[in-house]
Length: 281
Image (cartoon, rainbow, N blue to C red; front, top):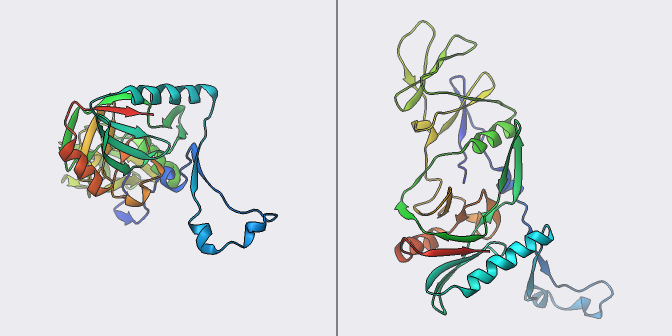
């Protein structure tokens, strides 16, 4: 769920996208296997057209026996469910809206990258959790508050140091500029001046080769457009939402949330009421 933000270094804007490792190196626990002819198979000379039409077999791999057991248990719960509900097959990147025994909607989704990020003694594991959740709330044009791991990714990818900027804190930079906050904005005060100048929004804050993490509640910690136009909240930070990264749909690319196409998430917003159960396996 990360936007390609630019870096703000000194007072110069660097066009260095905050690309996602999870999107560039998404590693899924699931794979696709395509049946093709071997070199020794007399059917090797089949037409290209027939090869293109060859069926694709989905192979679901598991990291361990307990991982397999967790999948089986979560799937069994989903299969026993009744009523109007949402079912997400995480590995197959597929979401279903079911009413009784009828499938009302089937849509491709992006799920978590199943990757691990480590930094400064902390570890983040990006998975879409199995189990049963509930649609707790819905909204339109949601904004995203980047967690700390977002800034860890950006700093790591761009070879930057990382530092939290606390609300009201004054950081004196090498050239004498003071970096601080006023109200809900992050800005600078130039050497010899007293005027507070807010920094450009939608930019990462980088000075002296250090990426500063903005305080919670400031405008610089709020990113519009990252979650698409609609969102269904599932609790604990997990959500079903849209995305500007439409090409990620159908892959393991997110940090845990479920991404949908613009058309599908709009349908979900209009047709899945708050209180609907969501089964994930």
